[in-house]
Length: 190
Image (cartoon, rainbow, N blue to C red; front, side, top):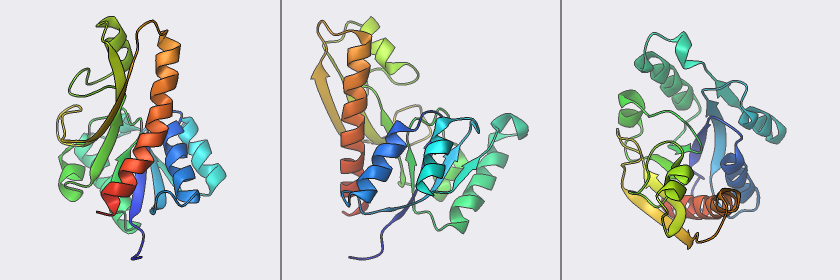
């Protein structure tokens, strides 16, 4: 097999999808090299997860920059220094701007906790439940300049009738942790 693609995971919180990706790599279910974790929240638990696994992390505080362009130029430099080929968003709560979109064109993916195009943006699970939708699920998609508007790569859904929000969230997380590594494996090696 050729060299494993180098990926960076962008996350803003707990990092459970980062952990699922790292575990899939460890278990040889995903042939990739996870070289960097990027977070816009230095206190996020994903930093601790990365540290435990010996994976370098880079934290930044967007408010300390005069513009998105400036912090994205710094991120681009960090990513290029490490030879990153793909950006994998996993609970990263910021829109990607023009600098990174241009540098990693068609090589930025995201996972979203709804069956897109339904319920883009924040609190997709809450939106799904409030709309009394019959099904909930997850979507892996390419990232473009919009909010959860990029081309869909894969989706999985399940019926939610009678389930509590907690039960729906649990099932969504289980689906994410299964679907994301599987989809990345297919995408990175097509």
